[in-house]
Image (tube, rainbow, N blue to C red):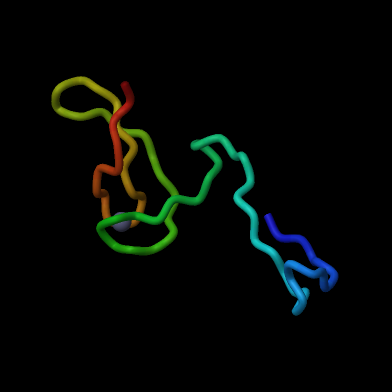
Length: 66
Ligand SMILES: [Zn+2]
């Protein structure tokens, strides 16, 4: 989430502030730890039968559903 800010005492330069926006993890752009790029995730089933979120680019398992 970006918003333009006017110069203030705490931020004399003004400019663009980048704020963390509360997004659901399903919509958030994740940075894959394996390929180090913002990636989309896909859900896939592990051999154990549990669901995991995996990187759509490299297939790395990012985390597992609880
Ligand atoms: Zn990846």
